[in-house]
Image 1 (tube, rainbow over the protein chains, first blue to last red):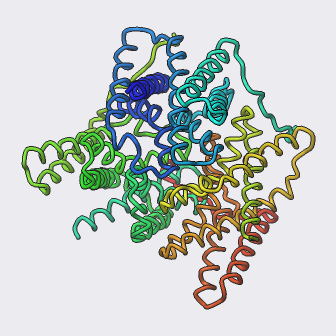
Image 2: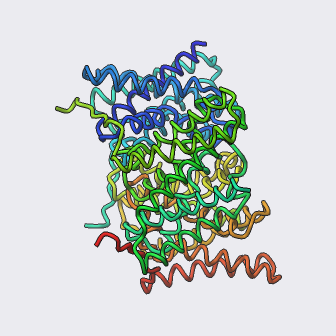
Image 3: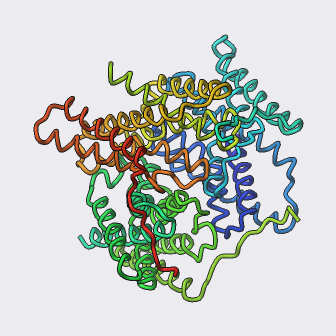
Length: 205
Length: 205
Length: 205
């Protein structure tokens, strides 16, 4: 029940961040809704398609879709009157990332997949929605670019969660530590502008 | 049988519109064919993947693929000699949209899915082919941008179809009304330049 | 066993070409890894999703993923010190294309699909990884653009393979001829700059 509530909060937060990103691209109202929904549900959808879970989660439980559309609509209405609260959104986004990454990892774990696949599927759940959003908006996906430790935070958190579990720590404990790691890595990266080194090929000089 | 013929006409029309869009991007012949096929079959493919219908429709019935490739080739040959008939193409495209949207919605309906999912899957069938085409051609998808009531028309038509059915009107009747709604909304939008309001975020000023 | 080794070489080569392409776009290290993995595994993944093989190949056999990541990492380390060997990479890439195309075609053949679908699925296995890579890097996919007989080579080789098989030539023989065709078409196209004619729509003048 708590997990369900947290999951819905994650969907709503990602829908808001999608709607805001769309708002910088002069889309019409429907386009904004499409981007909000894709950002919120895209990661989990890609995970479900790759794992061949049938059908994808929001087809079975339309609540997810309803929450994403509502959050997108509220964002449009809210930002018509007020400035979006950038700082609290970043924190909410970090929590959404942590939540989606670990719930995605647990789904892959339940299917008894290899640890590397569990990490990948978890990161995919957390990150692919934003990636598809950027592709639709014709921008190099931000998670590939400067990164600011986004997907990296997800990978680190999931790996720690798996390691703790192997050491015998109970599921709820290792999950909390994993999520805490993701949130704090993300927030630290934002505060101090941490990022991975950029790879530059020097064959053109 | 009539539905099958209509469906094939839809595929052909969408393949033509894809080939024409590719013709403005200096692709080679194979690239044009790829874009024609993706535009014609992409929407239904995404629907089948999301609903986990196995395998996707054109893998089972290669006729669809043959029609799409032929229509693309004929477009290339035709436009080498003549100007494309823009106006009749727009009308044909509106019919293709209406057809694909309602046949997609009926597939989701047959799987006894939630009404919201039925609308989404129908709209996806009608619209996603053009969306993938634009992504491959590195343009912000036109259905997200100015819209001209494209996906909106699909959504309105499917919703009306579902509402009429709930009111007890027989399937064929409500389907005709739904398709008529989509075609007339589209053509009205083109004639009078109707569009949804654009959402502009004002946090940068 | 030989096929498995060849397949792994194909994955490694495509991962290297992905990492090099990413190196021209100023991505961070993780972004480079993502692009390397997507280039190496994207084609087969799309094929598996379209054919609804469950789950996709690298989820079942994580070796593929490990090889792709290792090849990407080695590329980053290598190019920090040396220039990438462009010429040998092109030859390796041609071999990877030949390999993936024919192994993809055989998977579709084993599922008793229509010849046209076999060709399409084979070409998709060989080509779609590079296509997704270009979409993520926001470039018009190179296989659509000037082509240099890339997807065309794959299609020709697979078609020849199918034709030879129909004429009663044993599988291993027709496969070798098919792969040889792809590699030599590709290398000939690179050496003499062969390409398909570009399609130019003239409705704007």
